[in-house]
Amino acid sequence: MVEPERMFTFRVCWMDDKGEYHTNRGWRCQFNGAIGPYKGGLRFQKNVYEGIIKFLGFEQTFKNSLTGLPMGGAKGGSDFDPAGKSDAEVMRFCQSFMTALYRYIGPDIDVPAGDMGVGGREIGYLYGQYRRLKGVWENGVLTGKGMSYGGSLIRPEATGYGAVYYLQEVLKHENDTIEGKRLAISGYGNVGWGIMKKAAELGAKVTYFAGPDGYIHDPDGVTGEKLDYILEMRAKDPMHCKPYADKYGVEFVAGEKCWGVKDVDVYMPAATQNDVRMESAEKIAASGVKYYIEVANMPTTNDALNYLRAQKHMVVAPSKAVNAGGVGVSGLEMSQNSERLVWTAEEVDAQLHKMMKNIHKVSAEAAEEYGLGYDLVAGANIAGFKKVAQAMYEQGVF
Image (tube, rainbow, N blue to C red; front, side, top):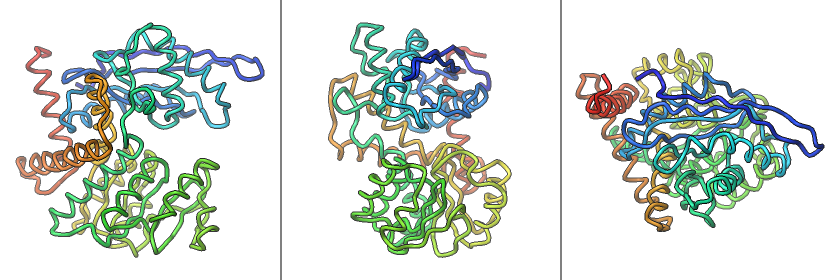
């Protein structure tokens, strides 16, 4: 189970706007297909390397298992950085990347999606090249597509929405409610924005959020027109959140993260991996906050996560369960594609809510079954493992 079924490494040559050629590496790790077609994102970032792709593919296998949908685990990407590149340069890179990848993917083989550095623009360019090369309309081969060619409503917000739905289930277990809760998050991209929006709809509010340049403290919460401004701000300059503080006259703390603030009820790291290290974990524990809900892929280092799990006053929820709503809605997009249907936003949201309730339920039940109490981290690992392992065993893997 810890060895990928197959992994591809390939060369990606592309031309910049000056007519100069560049070469990057590309990878696709098809980690485990025991319960369905390989499924997982593509990540374009300069720090991507083979080890990250392999590790994320391993995690994706169990995350996908928790959704209850028939999806295997995969991950892919490149050390190409879209930041600062023109649309034409990104298009040429994506076309070259897909020219190397298209032989190994398909609706019943492997269905990539977006991840960090791969948004709707990149998915469009990738799909356009796939269609040219194959000469067929296999719109189930990629998810995260635009609505004009087979995308699903609320997909950009789905991970954030699902995280809030999971938080609701944790609060119910603790005889608590989401109304009036104050959230501190990192990130304000699609995931962070989804958390802000859904939290506001359910009576909570994000009062702290962090970006690359520092963090914002807005005691009134990110609600109403502020949600629209977040979209405008990050479209103009995704590296700075200070304009929010300037516009709304709230506190901005430069160069710091909001871990350790005491006037919140829930921490939700939603930006990137290894965002919360031991120093931050100690501040979080000392703050007295009860709920620590991971959202980004592995946002907490192993030592920091173990430290937080050991705090008797805290409930800790793992990313593989909390952020599974994103890939879950990708799976729903695949279903819509296969049936040639477009579901309403309300239909997709209802399916997402149901999925997140079940993910929490199976995680809690697995932990209880093995005498671990309400250990959501262990429960998610056990529940995900059991489903994949059973499928491998029944197919004669051993």
